[in-house]
Image (cartoon, rainbow, N blue to C red):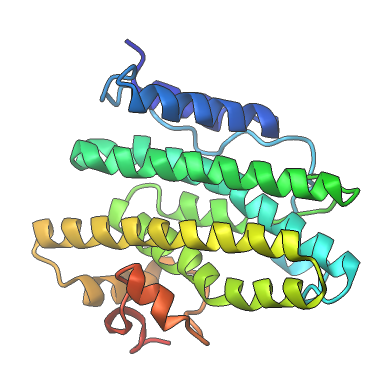
Length: 262
């Protein structure tokens, strides 16, 4: 029987976006149906495969996209979000397969379900871009999310602290304002898509917090204190407000974690 690690590696090694979506959906469906073995017999690649487009630039070379007030700005923002969701497919499957042997089977259940969500998010954003006369790859993008994954490849707690509990949690802070801007511009379809993604991301951050706290308890660590220490050493960004405390609380990420270092 094919292992979950082998299925995850196929996802990461698939470059073409819609093929990656299909591979992710196939792996998630096979896992749910018990057709993949809970076994970690292959290593994950250091970097996932990437298509020829979009051009990947360092963050400091990315063109300014504005806040979504103009049509051009909204397209740029939708493209940036599509890229985040595209990378997030790999992040979820890498999380499940790279660290799954360190956790109960339910860890894999959670992160494979996240991978399926991210594949769906990318697909609907890509479809929305096409309906507006653009496409994924039409603009440059940056690979900061995967840089965070590379930096935490050897430490499950660091990966949980940085990716779902810092980077994805930031999305909870900024998305409601973005949804309002799209509504204000009359783009209600895009606004509804972003709100759907926002609702799913609360659950994703909750998975990160849950497994971080389980691992800390097993290791005799205080979760909030250890998270702050890991953010201080492993996170290249800055924990800054304004914070969506309500959404963060729903995800279990209370101010005990971020209030002292914001």
